[in-house]
Structure formats: C-alpha cells, structure tokens
Image (cartoon, rainbow over all chains, first blue to last red; front, side, top):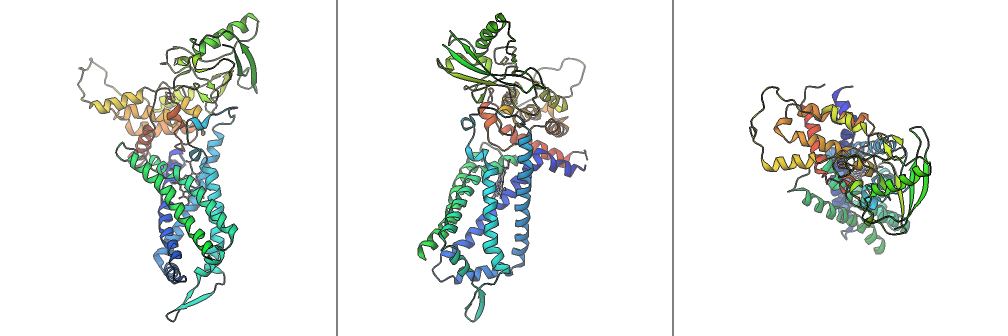
Length: 226
Length: 249
Ligand code: HEM
Ligand code: SF4
Ligand code: FES
C-alpha cells in the first residue's frame, strides 16, 4: 500500500475525509440558503427564476455542483465504512450503559441523523434537481426572455402539507447533525486551541440552529401564503 | 447496607458467559468498591464456589489495573478509579450491575478480567525516547517552559486503565494513544522519534482493532485522570504532519 492509501485507510485518515467533506457541505448549505431565501421576495418568483437560470448556465457552478455530489458521496461512503468498523470494535455490548452521563445524544447518533439526511437529500434531488434538469417544466417570460419557472414547481411542492412537514422535520435532523458536526470537524482536523475552540463551539451552535431554521422558514411561509 | 450484585461470570476466553446474581449484606459505606468484592469473594470461597475474578493492584488510583463497568459507567458513578470508589456512592437496597470492559481489542480472560496488552503493544510501537548513554546529564540542562512541562505532565497522568475505550461507543483508544503520543511529542527529549512515533502508534492502534473517534467526548468525561481530548487533536496534528513530511513511503 502506498503511504497515501495507507493514511486514508487509517482511522484518522477516514475521519479527516469525513471532516473535510462535512465542512464543504456546511459551506454549500450557506450558498444554497442564500439562493433559496430569494423565494421569499414577493415578485412572483422573478428574482428566484433568474437566479436559477444564472446558476444553471454558469460553468463554475457546474464544476462546484459535480464536486458537491462527489463530496456527499464520499461523506456517505465513509460514514458507512466508519460506522461498520466502529460496530465491529465492540462485538459484545454492555447490558446497561449510561451514555447520556458522558456525551450528547447528537454525538452518539450521527449515523442515524445522517441516514435521515440522506433520505431527505434523495427526495429533494428527485423533486427539484431532477425535475428542473430533465423533467418538463412550465416556462415564463420576463422582458421578452424565456425562463424555466422553477418557482412554480417549488411553490406547488410547498402547498403539500406532507412535503412541508417532511422538510421541516429534516431540518430538525440537520440541526442536530450540525450541533455536533460543526465543532467536531475542527477537532478532527486538529484545530483545538484555548483561544479559538470556545468560539468555534459557539459559532457551531448558532449555525446549527440558525441555518436549518431559515431553511425551514421558506416552505412554512410559502405554505401559509398559498 | 444490603445490596444485590449482578456480576458477569465467564469461565474463560471461549466461554459465552452470563450474569449471576449475588446478595450481600452488612456492607459499610466506608468500604471501597473492591473491598466490597473482597467480602463477596470471602463468602464464595467459604462456600466452595469460584470467587469473582477482577483486576487490581495498587488500590490507590495510580497503577491503572482496576477496571469494571459499574451500572453503565466505567469505574462506576464517580470520575475516579474503581479502587478509589467508595460504597457511600451507593444506597441500601441498590442493584449493582458489574460488567467487564467491552472491546474487541480487550478480550475477556475470565469473569471481569480483560486482556489489555493491546495497550502495551501501542506503547511498544513508539512510546519511547532515545537517550545518550554515558555520564549522568546535568539537571536543568534542557530548558523547558513551565507551560509545556505542565501539558506534558497532564498527558503523562494517563495510567492506561482503558476506561476511555470502555466508555467510547466506538471502543476507540484515541484518548489513551493521544496521551502517550503527547507526553513525548511536547518535550525536547521526544523530538528524535517524533514523526515515526505518531505514525507507528496510530498504525498499531488501528491494527489492534480499536474503533475510530466520533468526538463524543465520553472518554474525557470518564477518564479517572482527567486526560483532555485536546490531546486527540494534538495526535491528529502530529499524525498528519508526520505522514506528510516523513521519509516513510
Ligand atoms: C448537508 C448535509 C451534511 C452536512 C453539512 C454534514 C456535516 C458533517 C460534519 C461537519 C461532520 C463532522 C465530521 C467530524 O466529526 O470530523 C459530520 C459527521 C458525520 N456525518 Fe455528516 N453531514 C451531512 C450529511 C450526512 C449524510 C447524508 C450522512 C450519512 C448517510 C452523514 C453521516 C455522518 C456521520 C456518520 C458522521 C459521523 C462520523 C464519525 O465521526 O463517526 N452526514 N457530518
Ligand atoms: S486516558 Fe484516562 S481513561 Fe484512558 S487509559 Fe489513560 S487514564 Fe485510563
Ligand atoms: S488498583 Fe491501581 S489504580 Fe485501581
């Protein structure tokens, strides 16, 4: 084995891949949210549709989106590899554990939270990404130029109470995943320091509440406006 | 006080093992947990039964031999070693469940005794420094800032008990290994083997079958010596800077 594959197959190497891909996904969440918030501009979806078109035609965004898919895939594959390895490390379990006395619930259930997130991502991709890219969608015209009416699709989806409930619930899972994941990624990368770690933990907590809450706000607002 | 003990009994490494219940009476709250078990074993011996096997040595919290997973926590409800745990932490009528450390890398030998030689092999892989033989060096020849010496001493407090592994949901040995990497990496004397130490100790830790780290912090919360997970972050730094810059391909 070369030193590279040996390192990436070590427990530490696998964790660093989790941390790096996780941090990238966190960055992606911010960009994605900034785009989504345009759904709330009361202009019948014009700003959002124009934004969607710019994103779809930008070659840089294309590269980033391929990277994004790859990072999700790596994050998921390594979460399976790590979880299976960790399970095997304790073949016989305890009859009683008081795990809540020494660790948080989220930190012990990253795999379960991640699995719910994966289901959400797949449903989300099928409903929006796939439809917009390959499905037939209505068109709309602004100043004589034709645009795909992505807003109409989103608006239709968010008038379904089940979809909205699923979305909001999933953001709850995201909040818990991030409440541990954000700070954990820095620790994994070796960034633990008396000066910065308290700040990282605080930012992580605020981030893990604020970002999922804002994501969840959009379908809620659109549902009640419909 | 009177207690019910549910103790894991297992004849040997290949036996399946099961819990067995024992009633014990008139236990003083000033007894240590191990003294309570001594009383039980006395009674079992007089009855001609096989006493409960458990590890212990110094009984003063410094050797790391005692173990025991008591009512869901390694070393019981206090953040101390089992030998320093006293019966005043329990109430009359309590049911106390006692299990061995559970980890693939800590196979059960008998009852509550597990084989922790995987820890020894991790230390052998890199927990040493090279020194010149010859005359005794002058004291204070190598200047070390107090803050660094303190950090190294904090890491060196690890007694190798394995409670971190026992507490971790992944049976990970990161806290132990990181303490052993840190205590030497921090000091000037540890610089010669610095890179090879990090690489070899991590490789040995993985080879022994310990789990990976999810940063739950359970190890730090349960460690009787208060070893901090900042050591794990340091080990990660040591390991990656070693891997990226060493000559080992
Ligand atoms: C928006 C999506 C996601 C984001 C932002 C995200 C972010 C993160 C971050 C930052 C970490 C911490 C890494 C570390 O401890 O070093 C993490 C850990 C983890 N993630 Fe995700 N994640 C996402 C989706 C997923 C999905 C879809 C899965 C699995 C199916 C998943 C499974 C896990 C697991 C199991 C861990 C813990 C690994 C361990 O330490 O044992 N995540 N995630
Ligand atoms: S780090 Fe703490 S819990 Fe782990 S072996 Fe050392 S002293 Fe025991
Ligand atoms: S017997 Fe030595 S630390 Fe408990």
